Length: 430
Image (cartoon, rainbow, N blue to C red; front, side, top):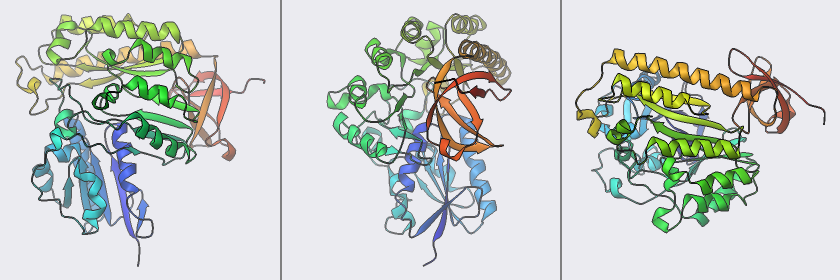
C-alpha cells in the first residue's frame, strides 16, 4: 500500500510544538510519510493558536495555502482556535476535520476512519483534570517537554483557560519517567513547557520545585525552564537553578505591565515589586543569566502616564529582552467589554517604543557577554556554511559547519554579534 503524505504546521507556543510531535508519532511510519508543510501532501494538519487575532489570521492563511497546494487534500485544524471557534473553521473551504484540545490526540483515529469526532457535542473538557504529556524529538538535540496544561488564573485579557481548560499535570514520578525516555533518545537539552508550569503538581499535593528537584538527578546535560509566573518563581527555585549545572541560567518571566493599577485590572496575582525582587535575586546569584519578560501594551484604560511607568520600570531593571504583545480583544474575556479601549494607532506606537526598549536591553546584555567563555549546544540547522546553537544563557551563536559538531556541546569565546544578532565565536586554548 502506498504511503499517504502528511504535513504538520504549528502555530503559537512551545507547548503546541511538543504536542504536535506527540500527535505525529501516533501516525504509523509504514502508512504515512511526513513531509514539509510547503510540499504537496495528502493530509495537512494545522495546530492552531488563538492567543491573539493575528495568530488566528495566520492559521487561516495556512489553511488557504494548503488548499491551494492540493485542492484534493484533507485539511485538519486542531488546538486552541478549534476549541474556541469550531464553527468558524468548519465554514472554511477545504477544512475537513476540526478537533479541539481534548480530541486532537485522536486525530489518527479520525483520519483512519475509526472515530468520528467532528460533530461531537461539547464534553466536560473545561473542568477535566485529564492530562496527556507530550514531547518533541525532531532534531535530536533539544526536546520541548510538556509537563503541565491548562490554567486556573483567568486573567482578564486571556482566552487560553477557555481553550485549554483547568490546570493539570501528572505527578512527579510519572513526569520523571517520561523525562528518562526523552534522554534515552539522545536528547541533550530538555525545555520544560506548559501553560502555567509553576502550577505543576498542585492537584497531587506536589509542587514545581519538587519536579525540578527530581529532574536535577536525571542524566541530561541541560534543562531549560520556560515561562514561570513571578509569584510562582520562588527564591527556592532560583537557588536550585543557581546551584545546579543541569539547569540553564535562563528565565522567562511574564510581567505584562509595570504599573500596579493595570496589573490589578488584568487580574494578575502579583504586584510589580514581586517581579522586581525575582529579577534582582536572579542577577545576584547568576549575574550572566538571561531574563526575558512578556509585556502587553495597549490594555484597556492604560493611560499615557501608566505606559511610561511601565517603560521606566523596565528600564530600571536588568532584564535581557522583551516579548512585546499588542493587546488584542479576545471575545469572552472580561477585558473585551472594559471601557476605554485604545485605538490601534496608540497601541502600535506604544508597541514600537517597547520594541526599542527591548533592543536597548538586548544590546546591553550582548555587551555584557561579549568576550565571555560559555558552552554552546550546536543544533542541526545550517545556513551558508554555518552551524548554529545557543549558549547556556540563551545567546545564539554560529561557527563553520562540521558534521561532527551537530548535537555536541563546545566551550567557545563570544566574539561579536552580527546584524542578525548571532555571535561569531572562537575557541579558547584548553
